[in-house]
Length: 358
Figure 1: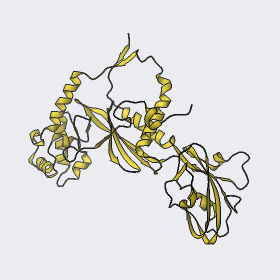
Figure 2: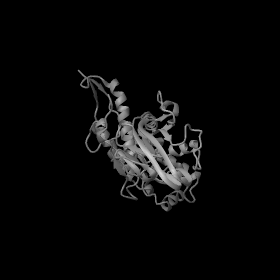
Figure 3: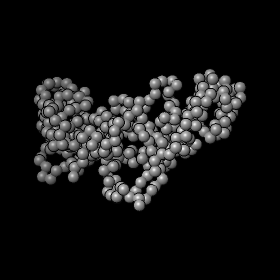
Figure 4: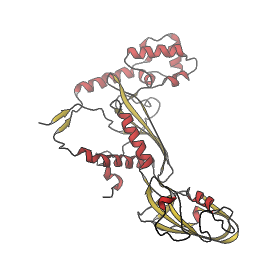
């Protein structure tokens, strides 16, 4: 007979509230208490440390034997050229190292656009400055670009029996520049102690935030596979029951109730009307900081409203699971929904052809 475990509250969808080229904000709710931090912190660490990217690992400049040299006719010394090369963002379409050439014969600025690319390479920021030639002259440089993970120092990139004149440089492979997560309260039924996870991802343009999150999730799942080698027929989780559905229905009615029905003082009621807050749901999703920004709304009115919400087993700054209340529904068409797994359930490692080396 299988072991039966209690039902866990889990998000059904991932909602994308902001979607830009190199920044996105995702919201997932509800999680059981504490799981917001567990999932958020795990994803943040993987996003910052474990995603693959491409970067220059070594260079060879005609006329320079080491990184402290100066090249005739070039304003910058080799050390400064290396600093500029670290800022060039590559995207490789092959896992094999790529050797590229930069060959110019001109006067003036040399940029990433002057690098000769092949069918396997792409530069995200071709305007990135590399060096300046103070007279018309030939400038020749060879670059090796590789796929890697995280950060590798020049010493790590240095090869055994490396040829004279080849300079190994520091490589920043990670395409994710910043990750921030926040956990707020979410309500399910009459309980308000569930977690709502907000995850913000910034990238440098080499990867979309959506793809970064999908890859990080797949990496986590890949590492957890060894721990879930059990007979799946021997452990079952309870599904949602009718009582839970009834609680959601009652909560919907409560959140749709007009704020005029909760018997506020004239001053507090006028403040809410002036702020165009008409329902209990709108009020419960506002934070204390949001409320104090409204004109003529002070601590006394704030405390009065908090007491009234407590009587309703609610509070300020709440978020609610999908299907119960949409905080944006009354002012806009609602936030976009996003599921990295698509409409159907698929294995994380199948998304976008993602696979791991054996």
